[in-house]
Image (cartoon, rainbow, N blue to C red; front, side, top):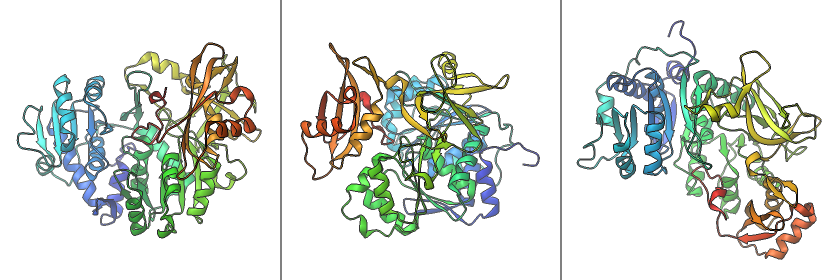
Length: 518
């Protein structure tokens, strides 16, 4: 440790040194101290090294939100390797693609997903080591390269010390794969420095402290979910880890029991909460901050969160995996600028450019550019995709991130998300951002969720099609929705079609999947 450059696993090691007996993790009613997590991570790291994992080797974790996933994450870093958590909903074809894409040397998997990884592994050309946690069936390790049970891997190695550190802060810490809705998944390469910087910046404006109890209900395979764990360990706080928000009353009971102080969510979670009839039965007064990312909060969600968590600060945030977080809206500004996603996070700079790469003044819509130490190193072995996103910055030799997101700024520098450049609908010769139409729909009392796409139209070029999920007990027809849109939107932005659904297709993170809408 002496004289070593900072690395992400320092968060765990320092917390274990400072307060080894403090509870670091609560998962499935089991409590793990920092000493427990650190010791198990050391043992697994030594076991990975003994199994042939070398500096910079890629290790995939194919498991749910669990203590094993948390331990494995830190163990891979301690083994001087590169960690990638893969969503357990991933199918065999995609898992095989990911194993081959990053040439993974090891796979750490949960036995409950055996059907998937057993179908994927034979197609992997580089896998040397497989570690399986959970209940492994008889013969369940047969044919898997270098296969060991989780308990055996931990018991075979010492817990007191980790492998000798050979990495430094500019080495890769993680590859986070994007959803790949427009083709093969891309691996976002993040260095230790990227992730340390992001955790420090976000922790600064959230004012996270060691007394905090953070809820981890979003998938660890999703960077927003992963950073809840990283942030908790950075400050020596406690993480309360749940598999999902599928059973909200169960999660709320845990929040009450553990006196959760930090509640990170997404609009889908808040929409589910708002429908709960029994919400008043839960004492949520311990919550001191609520965070949201993916999009600006609809005003009715802001009002709901204020009512549900009256003493909590509400942080509306925006970011993308390629740089973790771009902006946050200071809670004091949420009433003044409810539609804004805020200002640049600490230690980050942003601006907007037009199609000719000229900086734009306030009020003009352009592509968002991010500059700072959180910006990724690129996409794993995809130079063309990398060159599209990373371009020369103001200083010689530096690269900045061209996000592909259209935004505008007001006179005070506050940012407003308009839409993805790829999502823009061209209707009647005008450009329409789906997000603007969705915002109007989402703020109608009768609407629970909404999504907007463009569909081919012989006259309009593209027609606007809205998919709407009504709030529980609400009634409305197409004419009602269109009339409300006509009152609030310019004519060319009013949908041509309104389709009512019981639910919208979603990915594992709760994000609406528009590729499932036609």
